[in-house]
Image (cartoon, rainbow, N blue to C red; front, side, top):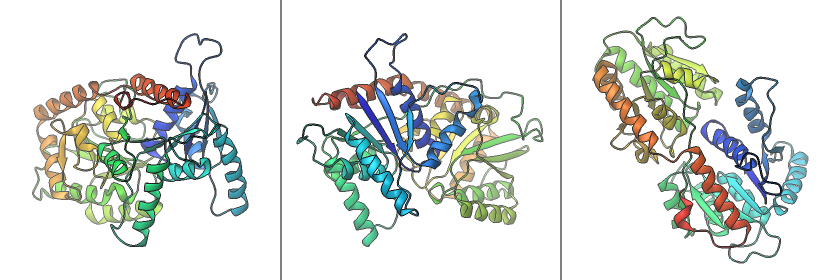
Length: 405
């Protein structure tokens, strides 16, 4: 079977998930592999995303073999029309030569259904099956021409894809409302993390943290959707003790991730005014070590699916404070602390309570780890996708009962 994964410009959890999925699907799943079996995987993406994957694999060492799939830079470059046209022609040829096309994200999904053509249930000979996975909601104004345009694009994907899946239940419900009757929620898993919480050695660059300093950790792109100004306001409340329990000892809040330069500038200006102990660390390759040093994990997004960063924190046994939005309640209801979007007072109170109460913090961390262990693991998620792709490639029906594996 020939499988093409399509992804545009992506960072953070989505890029990591597609990278892991591609590498997993490219292997036969058996050791040693049986001759003549397995899947030929080609990934079509942007130069930026391909570069991020190379950076992500850097910890393995410069001499480590790259046994992953064939990655091709074919995402259209809108500022270079001739290059974009050549890439579109090459991408169309690649997609139409596949057995299954699996597009990740709204832009990739729209591009896939337009370039492949046809309709589900009326597959002409040689037309590949098209799978679209939505990882994010389309955010923005609920009215106006832009809203009408994005809704039309969503509806086209919902009606043209052979299978549409969502990373959280609200995305799946949206797809069904727009015509994807068989839409299902498919989990995105993270591998287990090595090392216990509380590793004494400080991560590189944080050697100046005094022993006993409590650490709140946020792993997030610097983007408007992540609502990091609310984080800074909450940190300021903790410093002042304004409506929140003030931590008894020293503490700091680490923010890991890069992204929009304008967002970063705004945050640094806000931090100067707030005087809060928040550090913007940029992109890091040692997130497991940072999780091991942290005491609390927090996420302030206006919307998330089943955020990989939250699942990583749960795997590390950290108590999690996050906004009640998207798929986060699916992960954290009854396990973590959920606060309203944009409510810096509630965020400060939740984080302050955990920092001030080691017993409660430890119990919340154990509950998070137990909830993580009940989630589908990487092997189960990979097996589910192998099954769906194989069924669609064979032209037979896929089973909704098995689609959530």
